[in-house]
Length: 527
Ligand SMILES: *[C@@H]1O[C@H](CO)[C@@H](O)[C@H](O)[C@H]1NC(C)=O
Ligand SMILES: *[C@@H]1O[C@H](CO)[C@@H](O)[C@H](O)[C@H]1NC(C)=O
Ligand SMILES: *[C@@H]1O[C@H](CO)[C@@H](O)[C@H](O)[C@H]1NC(C)=O
Ligand SMILES: *[C@@H]1O[C@H](CO)[C@@H](O)[C@H](O)[C@H]1NC(C)=O
Ligand SMILES: *[C@@H]1O[C@H](CO)[C@@H](O)[C@H](O)[C@H]1NC(C)=O
Ligand SMILES: *[C@@H]1O[C@H](CO)[C@@H](O)[C@H](O)[C@H]1NC(C)=O
Image 1 (tube, rainbow, N blue to C red):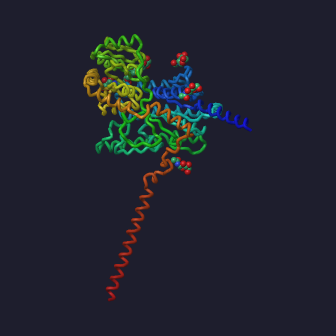
Image 2 (image 1 turned 90 degrees about the vertical axis):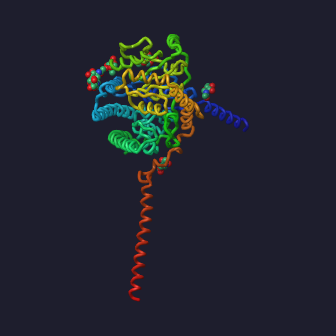
Image 3 (image 1 turned 120 degrees about the vertical axis):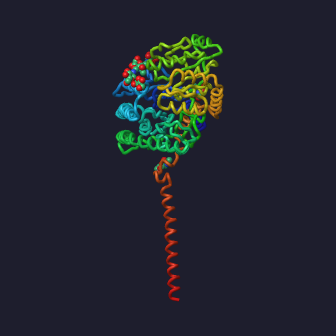
C-alpha cells in the first residue's frame, strides 16, 4: 500500500519535474525583411526560455535563409514560384518609387499601386493554396502538437492555419493600411476626430478641414480595403475553409495583438485589452565596433559621426540622387558611415565611408554619434530612440512617413523629401539636428520615456505569448463587439426603439388632448 503511494508520488514528482523544465511549442508564420528581423528577436528569446519554436517558411522566401543554422527550427513548404519572383517584384517597386514615381500623376500612382497589389496577390494566394493543398504538411503540423501560433499578418492565411489546427493566435504588426485591419477586424475604436489616419501627416490636434480630410481618408481606406478583401481574400478563405468565411472575421479571432510601437511616439488613443505595445523589443545595448570601424569613428575627434542608412531594401540610388546626397555629406565636419551598396557617387568626400552593411545598433549606441540619417523604418527608429540619437528622416514608403512625422512633431527629427531635396537642404537639416541642442534634448526625453516601462518590451512580448500558451488562449480579452452587427454597435436599434417610444408618447398625448379638447368643446356647445 505504502509502496504504491510512494510510487505514485514519485511518478507525480517526475511528471512535475518534466513539465517544469519543458517549455511550450510555438509555430511561427513570419513576415519578410525588417518584419522578420524583428520577429527573430522574439523567437531567440523564446528558445532561450526553453520553448520549442518552428518557423513555417516557403521555399521562395525572399529574406529568410532557412539553410542557416538557427536556435529554432524551420518547416519548409513548396510553392509554385521562385524567390526571384518576390525579389523582382520588390526591386521593380523600389526602382519605380525612387525614379519614375517622381513625375507620376495621382491616377498613375493609383493604377501602379493597384497593379502591384494584384501581382502580390497572385503570390500570396499561391502561398496560401500551396499550404492547404499539402496534406503531408498539414498532417505533420497536426502531429507536432503546437501550443500557439505567432504570426506576422504581412501575408494572409496564418489565421486559417490557426483555425485548422485549433491553435490560439498571436499577431505581431505595426499597423495596416488605414488601420482597416485593426478597426474592422480587431474592433479597435478610432474616432476620426482625434485619431489621425496613418496615411496623413496630422497629429491628434486637427483643425476642422484636417478632420474632414481624416474622415474622408478613413472612409476611402475602408471602401478600398473592403473591395480588395471582398473580391480576393473572402473568396480565397471561403474556398479553403469550404464554407462562407470572411477574412476579417477569422483575423478578428486572434487572441493577442503585439503592436510594434509604444506611447513614446504614438499619440494617446483608445485600445482594447488584447492589444499589447512592444515597440523597440529588438533594441540592445551597443557592442564594441570592429577595430577598423572604431578607428574611423575615433578619427572624427570632437565633431563626432553621422550614421546613414536607408534600410535593407534600398541598395542603390540613381546617379543624380547619389551625387546630391554625397555632396551634402561632404560639407559637414563630422565623419559619415553610410550603408550603401550601389555605385560610389563621384562627389563622395573623404569624410564619408560607404559600407555594404553596418552594425547599426552598435553605431547608434556609440558615444561619438551625433545624428542618424534614416528612411524611418520602425526598427531603426526605435534603435535611435533607445540610444537617444536625433534624426534626419528621409521617408520612402510604407510606415516610414508616419514614423518620421511623429518624430518631427516631437521635435526630435528634421524631415526631407527624398525626391525633391537638394544638397543644401540636406546639409542644412543635418546642421540643425547636430548643432541645435533642442533636437538632442527632445530625443533624450523620448528615450527616457521609452526606458521607463514596468517591463522591457521583449519581456512583455514573451510574457503574452507564454500567457496564451498557459491559458490556452486569451479569448476573455476579446471585446463582445465582434458579435454585434453594425447597427447594434452604433446603438441604432436602441435609438430607433427610444425614438419610437417618444414618438408614441407624443402621438398618444396629442390624440388624447385633441380628444379631450373636442369633448369639452362639444360640452360647451350643448350647454
Ligand atoms: C531551461 O532548461 C535548462 C535545462 O533543462 C535549465 O537549466 C534552465 O534553467 C531552463 N531555463 C528556463 C528559463 O527555464
Ligand atoms: C544561407 O545560409 C547558409 C548557411 O549558413 C549559407 O551558406 C548561404 O550562403 C546563405 N544564403 C544566403 C542567400 O545568404
Ligand atoms: C528613370 O526614369 C526615366 C524616365 O522614365 C528612365 O528614362 C530612366 O532610365 C530611369 N532610370 C533608372 C535608373 O531606372
Ligand atoms: C521629372 O521631371 C523633371 C522636370 O520636368 C525632369 O527634370 C526629370 O528628369 C523627370 N524625372 C523622371 C524620372 O522622369
Ligand atoms: C540599382 O542597381 C540595379 C542593378 O545593379 C539596377 O538594375 C537598378 O536600375 C538600379 N536602381 C537605381 C534606382 O538606380
Ligand atoms: C460571441 O458569440 C459566440 C457564440 O454565441 C460565443 O461563443 C462568444 O463567446 C461570443 N463572444 C465573442 C467575443 O466572440
